[in-house]
Amino acid sequence: MIRADVLAAIILTALLVAIAISVLMVLAYEYRRRWTITNRRLDRVLREQREIAELREWYAAPAVTPEHERGDS
Image (tube, rainbow, N blue to C red):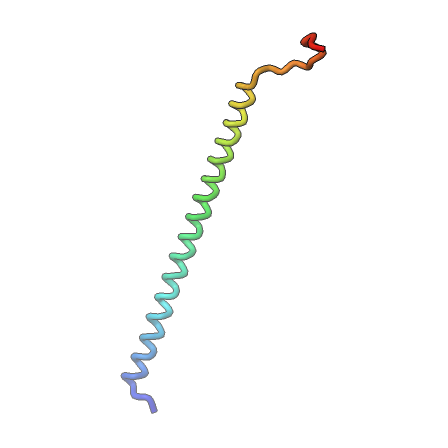
């Protein structure tokens, strides 16, 4: 038969391991949540920058007229 102190040590160890696993799971969840939010923000900023660059190119482009309107044949 297992002695009481050995049984208590086993139960305490199992309890501490369960608590440690729970804490790690919470930390992993929070890290993943923050990472997802950061990625979404980064994606939004990059998309906005890309749209701004496209608009700058569009406004900076010289007006192109078709050849038949220019008179060049």
